[in-house]
Length: 61
Ligand SMILES: [Zn+2]
Image 1 (cartoon, helix red, strand yellow):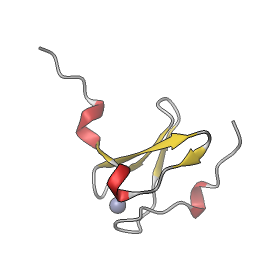
Image 2 (image 1 turned 120 degrees about the vertical axis):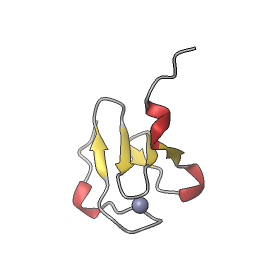
Image 3 (image 1 turned 45 degrees about the vertical axis):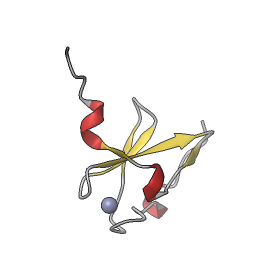
């Protein structure tokens, strides 16, 4: 995949630095506990599209 300029990526909600999760191809905002997906090498930096970070922890039934 193309290299993403992480330094240019900021959370649309709090404008903080996002962390790149290479394993899951997503961006994480630790301040908001939100996860932003990366689709076709393009980060989807929309607050409405963000998912709660705690979804990454599997829930065992
Ligand atoms: Zn944020």
